[in-house]
Length: 373
Image (cartoon, rainbow, N blue to C red; front, side, top):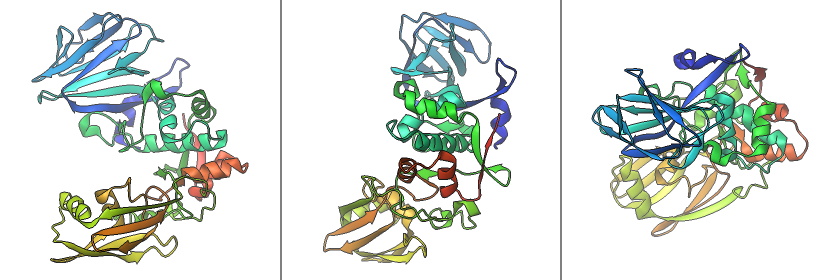
């Protein structure tokens, strides 16, 4: 667990410890709007002066050099906003959030907006963004434990920016209260505090939409993970065949591929052809692509190629391709990097009657689920 963990542990009403996360909602933005269902207060982090605001008004937030303005009031470089009444909720740009909101300015004329929230309440706003609330409860519970573990393992990842996790796909997609659903919240509540461990340590519980039949050894996807832990090796998955992304294909013009690779620093001439240079022995995913162009040949890892060209089009690296004169056709299975939990596989297993703990141990073998805090 990251060093910042101790900074976000607080005593709950019953004397136990409650974990709080700092979620980056917006970064380096010029302005934002803040509102509340009831009255709220703003505490200047430097002077500790408390200012009161009426919940009847929507206030604009701006940064001027190293200070922050909210409505017509001026604060220092950091301010924390909280409802006066516990059950009232703040809103940022029209979206409601549990917990408190922090605003940070770093002498750039820009602000960063952060939601400080308990981990269980955070998960209420994550699960509906990552899976369908209509799925079986055991699949939702599996996602809840995986997402909780991921969040706790990632605490402090963006410490230099003032928060723990991003509200985007860079961490887990977080929608606040606007997206909450009783089914997914029930899955969070029924697994409260449960996390996945391996040899006594939290695991890196990554996940993806659809594996296409085989999950992947992490070392074949991210180059800095060559010595993969046992729980991150690929497994056979016959359960995700009902995913709408199980089979896919796309056609991309060679010039568009070249332009996208140029943006990532690859200097290429006119592309002649692209070939799969190596495949994973178990899943047969592409590991490396060779790009042949008028200036020679460039070898690119398949994951980097996919992300550069467009992960919404090249949905996985479990694929074949065919070269045409001015374009390339990609035909593949699955969606995502293929490592860890296959979400549609978890759904398929739950639909067949498997429980969430069995599902988790299918995709993260030799791990243990424990209740933490």
